[in-house]
Length: 279
Image 1 (cartoon, rainbow, N blue to C red):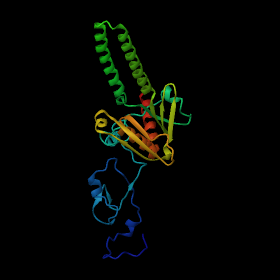
Image 2 (cartoon, helix red, strand yellow):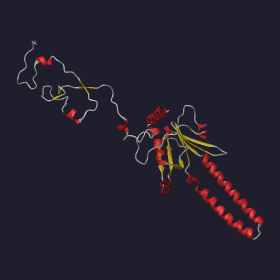
Image 3 (spheres, rainbow, N blue to C red):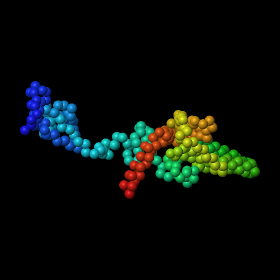
């Protein structure tokens, strides 16, 4: 029998001391609580009020059972799939990161550097050479035919030699375009160009103070743009990088690597985990 003083009947929320000697049993949180559970369960209301939930008054409280868990359906609105990584604005979704560098790019990476991707210049860079080759071929055919008709064998040979030189020049430009690569790592950006004389220009990401890309009307039509990089130094090995494909995607990748490298690592780790589960 309790020996304490009896509470006054006028006291708001008065309870008998026999009731106060028994502590309320914590109620486990429902697996999927609904609005009705929270409507009748106010942890801040007075414990002596008559409304109850599951046999316990409103003074009962929930007990967390470990960290919250989420299903894949709850993440479906935050990402576009297992391979696409974090969500980005519609129309700007980034393709999966390249796993390994080509042999052409790998020779310029040091062992602790993490490769993020490499890109060739857009095919629009070969538009002039392609036009020259087509025009030279058409002109050569017309002139050679006319010279043959008039028995000008020597002049026809000269025309064929000039045409061959023009075609070789265009072929050399195509080969140079093939070896011209823009490379992104977790430390720097690089441009590798040249067949006989190799040029390797680079800029550390930490030194990039400003970056923008310009996309003209034709660039928006065919999917290419020009990048301009600003550095803290005066002499810049990389400043204007022209005719890069998918400039919006490339811009997002560079910015993410500069400001959110942990997100890139998390996306790569999640993609690797998905592949391991699949195998």
